Image 1 (cartoon, helix red, strand yellow):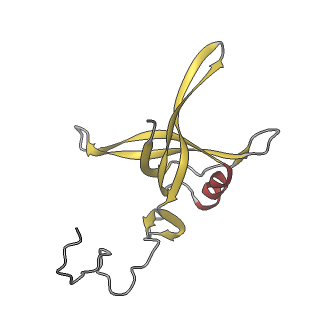
Image 2 (tube, rainbow, N blue to C red; image 1 turned 90 degrees about the horizontal axis):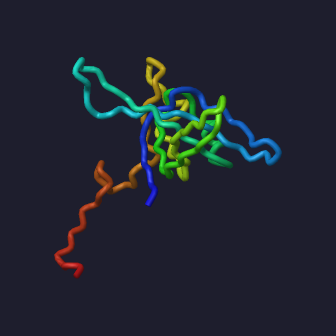
Length: 141
């Protein structure tokens, strides 16, 4: 099984490109992902993961995401090998199957950093966590 799920911020604005000859849209971007702990100096560390997306998804990323955007990525690991200056090089990246936008261009804080806004409203009668109490003494099994 080859499945990767990541949540992080784009390190720069994505640039939409097209495959020569075919015209298939694609975008490559790097996600900065905090490690969840601090180093000996008390600073947060991050990993930088290369991600690629194709077709309509690539066009949407180029249109709606920018440096600092928070996104969730579900995909698979890919290892590409190529030759440069007579040396074989290897790059590991994530091929995105699904990208979820967790912040938007119109939703920035005062310092310019994107912030999270839920993309739904809870229906009437639900508590803040989205659960509705049911008064039912009957056991369902």
